[in-house]
Every structure is written in C-alpha cells, then in structure tokens.
Image (cartoon, rainbow, N blue to C red; front, side, top):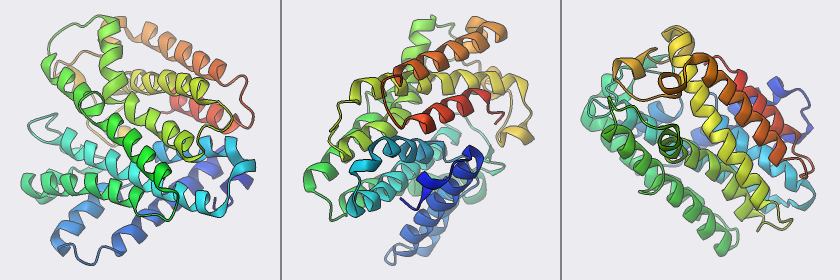
Length: 303
C-alpha cells in the first residue's frame, strides 16, 4: 500500500495520496502506446491537473480497515481502483464544464478542457477516459469475480441511476426551487454515488469479509451529501482563485443549491449534522480513524 498506512499526520498522508495517485495515472498513460498523441494529450490534461484526489484518499482510507487481511495482489489492485475512480471523475468534470452543461472556462485553476482544446477534443477525450477506467479495473491478475464486481460498482455509480441521472435532474431543474428531499436525491446521484463507489469497490475487493458494508455505506451516503453542501457554501463564500473554478456559478446559472433552499447558516448546520452522522456510522469499525479525518477535512475545506 505504498506505506501510506505508516504516515500518521493527516496532511502528510493526503499529500502522499496525491503524489501516488498522480504517479499511477502517469504510468497508465505512458503505457497507452496505441492512442493518438493528440487525444492522449487531452486525456492527460483532464486527469492530471492539480486536484484534491479526495476519491483516491477515500479508497486508501477504507482499505486501512482491512490492513490485517491485505496481500500483495490486493494492495496492487487498490492502485487500479484509485486510477479508475480518478479517470471517471476527470471525465465527469470535462462533461460538466461543456457549454451544453455548466459552460465553465476554469477548472482546477486553469482553462477547462474545451477552452484549451476545443469542444470536440474535450468530448472525445472524456469519452475515452470512461472505458479506460473499466479496462484498467479488468486488466489485473486478481480474481475475476472481484474485478467484475468492482467494475459493476463503478458502472452503477456513474450510469443512468447514478451520476448521469443526477446530472439530468440538475439540468431539468434550473430555476426551480426544489424541496430539500429532492435536492438530496439529485446530489446523492450526481455527487454522492461516485463518492460512495470509492468505498463499495474496496468492500468488493475484500468481499466484505468483516460485514462492515452497511455501516460504510451509511458513512459514504452522509459524507457524499456533506461534500455537496460544503461545495454550495464555498460557491458563495470563496473567490475563484481559491476555488480553482468560477465562484458564484450556481447562482449565475439559477441552480437550486443547499444555500438557496436553506440559507447559508442552516446549510452550515446541515453539513455539520451530516458529518456527525458519518462519524457515528463508523463507531463500531476498527481502524477507521483515517475515514473520520477525511470527513472532518471535507466539511472544513476551503476549496
């Protein structure tokens, strides 16, 4: 596991997660000798930009629960899971920024893919990242059942009932004032489903051998929504330089958010409530301190 579990300081651990995740992605891209160089350049631009690698961190943090059970093959496969989830996340951001979606020109502190390379290349590069994620999940020597189950978890998270479905609900409700339950449903799909898959793929890797899946799923559901609540708060309280993306974009696009529905103060209270529920879900799970640290990081982050 690249000795990540030996790093006690959370900030140092998170920095190491970023370095390891980027290194694994760079190795993967370097192996794609049959991909047109122009396409590969855009795929790398979309995937290797400066980012928090929160989803990678969730994968590695969840795996620490199973440290006593992990072998070399499983440790190696964690890097496949991390790369796959980051490729899917990158693809989703490229699509999200397109003129037909949020029409944004700034992502991770630099021009969005379609601004730098044009809409056609951005779209095609994002389209290429998605199958690459599953190819990487399935191209391991690990047990076939594990590979298929991990791929299925990611497919469910990103498909019509998950991330894509959530994006559709988002598009259809521009200028609408949703009920809090409907907003939560939208973001449990659009944002939360991919975050949840970070944990469910690790559970699939270890075949839920300790029976922690129910508690970990609850944690993931709470923290997935909390992430979006904080995102909505930051959209109105931080500037573009801090966020690395255009501030105030949700208000500009007349999108329903937790801030517009609850107000800023109540939205902050709701984020704290979700954090507390996430921590409570981990109460009976040993070696879950890193997941607790990540939950704390998610609600206190400023970008």
